[in-house]
Image (cartoon, rainbow, N blue to C red):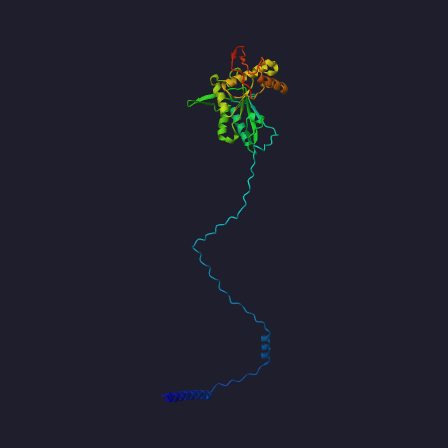
Length: 336
């Protein structure tokens, strides 16, 4: 079987070979067209030389523009910027109880007498007084008690200036009480009422003022008038941080009287205030009509505050009224 298969394979190979040979013979015997080469002329040689030396310029094919992408409907979320770290400045702590402000400058002391409806030589309209407070506030001034200036206890925030408000002669325009809803309140057009209202609007301005009063002056200058409310008025001033000063008993010009009358004018005014406001120290004094020089004033005021006419400290003295009548009051307290 194996021998027969081998013989068959050899026979098939021979048949294939014979077929291929016959095909090649047919191709060779077929008639093909004949080609005759044309002679090369001088012009053809010139063209061949030109082709060899000519530079080849390649023109790029135009590129079709890429299509514009359709706008995306998905909103773009911008990244949140990350702040760069900053160094926090170190706060400078100043102890103003140890580092006092510069007090070498001039401290203005505003002196008022009458507060009324119109301006005059001794009068300021209540509207203009309110305007004075506004101008002081806008200019950076803050009220301080006069006693604090004397004692070097000025307490004003850094960057602001102190100002002292004073009132002489205890006139009704400075302080009048009116009844409102069954209560006594300062008249809104008097100095105290205007100060109260301004302080409510500007707490940092302070509500400090000094009132130099006359206990026995002719009405209505005797402790702001309204005799029935004298104690209530002085209590109100003290309760609101205002000061009560001595302006003598009845506005006596001290340059025209002797030492005995100087002591009486100053001492009796203190006794009245002490009776109405027990325990209050009257340490401030304003000369009426500037009737004495600094040296004479210092000597007389010092003696009047520490002695009586008889030379006995603290002895009870009668109050001598302007009409010559007398009344007894408690002894003058020792100064602390």
